[in-house]
Image (tube, rainbow, N blue to C red; front, side):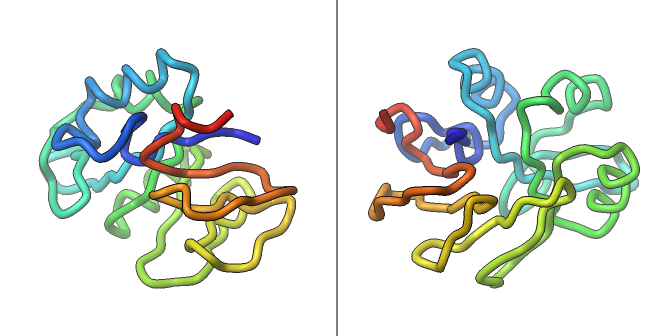
Length: 141
């Protein structure tokens, strides 16, 4: 099972979530990362509620193999899909299909062997899933 650091968080929520530094730190600890990303006329930005951290193509390319890009606007989804990166879009859906065929799954919903469950508090025990996205991947054995 893969462990995905939600917004780069590895030991709980952080005010630095989605920042380039926290993402690189999580990747250096061998976690994959979920990254909130958007593309505007001013380029790439990271941040959940808005464009906070401006990054370039080189940063996106640097982290692409360890990242699951949660696209926050249509431009980001289109651009990352063309590059064949792991990307997805969802808001209030129980499930969404990632660009590489995995099922991004809302907490507490049914799972399959190709599910990535979002469980921010490690409230559930899951068997037979592909991965878990959480703020606490360091606590998963």
